[in-house]
Image (cartoon, rainbow, N blue to C red; front, side, top):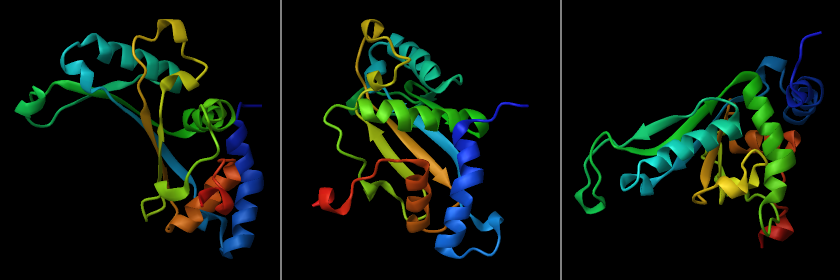
Length: 187
């Protein structure tokens, strides 16, 4: 039997039937799914010291399990001493099994390790069914050795879904196990 990620099986066995009954889809092909997860880390300090880009690539590769690439500036900004083509960040786009594995580690291990964590705000939806959340520090991931971290920096995680509305995407992510804030906690 071939290996299949836990959340992928949960999606097929539990989430699809739950969303079909909740939104009255006529086919299971209409049920929204997660298409990709984009992880991005801006490293503006890399303008003065390029080794921060190498450290960022190594850390992002450890966290996601996929080789990270550097992002380059698109234009010159003299106030920031920035030139076109300078590396200023690191990014990874995850799809398929690696995406489900990363999502599982994010929900089960990393998010609960955030300091003073009470839940994820539901204000990160973009109106088209995609969700973005900011992580304040990369050391919440167990793959990162705190002793070897040269600088604590945050990252943005964007989850792109095939949902047409934010309500559908919210229910999809909630069924996957995202610890969203309840209405009482939002106030």
